Amino acid sequence: MRRYPAHLYTLLVGALVVALAAAVSLTVSTQEAQAATVTVQAESYAAQSGVGLEATADSGGGENAAFLADGDWMRFDNVDLGAAGRLTVSARIASAVGSGTIELRTTSATGPLLAVIQVAPTGGWQNWVTRSTDVTTHPTGAQTVFAVLRSTAPGDFVNINWFSFVGGGDGQTAGWVPVDQAKWNAQVAQFRAMTPAPVPANVVRVPEFNATCDYSHSKPDDPIVLPGLAGASHMHSFFGNKSTDAFSTTQSLLNNKATTCAPAEDLSAYWIPTLYEGNRAVEPENMIVYYGSRLPDPSATLPFPEGFRMIAGDARAQTSTPAGSPGQYWCAGTGGEIGRSADGNWPVCAPTAHLTHQLVFPDCWDGKNLDSPDHKSHVAYTYDGKCSGAYPVAIPNLSFVVSYPTNGSTAGFRLASGMASSIHGDFFNAWDNAAQGHRVKDCITQKAKCNSAGTF
Image (cartoon, rainbow, N blue to C red; front, side):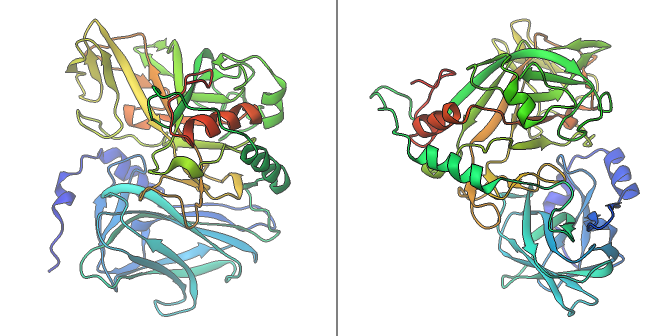
């Protein structure tokens, strides 16, 4: 009998998420003349060998196929690979040790090879990253797909949360927004031609600049997830560009010069789900948006391309967040946390402290797309201190630091999206290219801490 690692028994995940994941184990959305956009939960296999299941402890939610070793396999029936053309195959994986590959094959475990997903350590069995590869030719329509695990090392080497298959018969896949290569090349050329500012001797050597953005407005809109659908989202609190609504585009943001951000050259839109204390919305006075780098060598970092957008976190995640949980809210200020809410999911802050959260975004980009169907598959978190493979372009490591003017109580809070675990954030880039470029050049690539004005 297989011995399961101890980490199985230490996960804290709400039963509701597991139930929801089981109910929606296969999600398919199709469009005429385009390939399906298919997400297949790993636990929804029709048959398997050597696979265990465990609850997923972060924003991905649901269960994951766990304790996977060389030779293990899973079979998934009726996976719609759509029409002929490009297909992007992704897997959400976690690994604490070892390396190997996930072979995706059609028809049988030894059938034609569809794609190969590379596996390397991600920092833990529940530290999740998305790995993708592009396929130029593939079988079309509904297929039986086998996931076969390969590794030269003994023992378990990977957990899998889900697979996705996204492609288009006409070369333009629904949900993917290709970067305009000519415009991007011109932006990069402008950036490379910039002369970096001299760094004073007393500057803190941290690769960072920021934009300080006051709260602007709230709307049940989301121009990334639900573009053009006013009122279709849960309530969001918006920062930055004052015009942001369901109909916002790159051009509309650039055309509207009214922003709550310092510097004024940052016309980007930033938003998070609204926080409620009882039935009262608690709006942050401001959000500090940090642009930095987690890479040992940040000199390869490039600015965000115009119109770039992405999401961090998961509005669907409804899991418990007891003290010590990753990415939880905390109390900033004198006295810090003095207790927990009755449900254990929120801190209670001292009268001299306030509720705070930091949300960290991916920092590696595929270099091809401004957006993707899930608004995450075009980016990834670095797991080994560099950007490579399917995500070779280092972009600034964006993070939102949000402070709320409240201490909280044992009654706790709720987000417009649900529990504390559902915290998420959206970024729609509308920086002035030159202003952003100089900050990346001066502050990040030179590893020097800058302020909102972009100066040392």
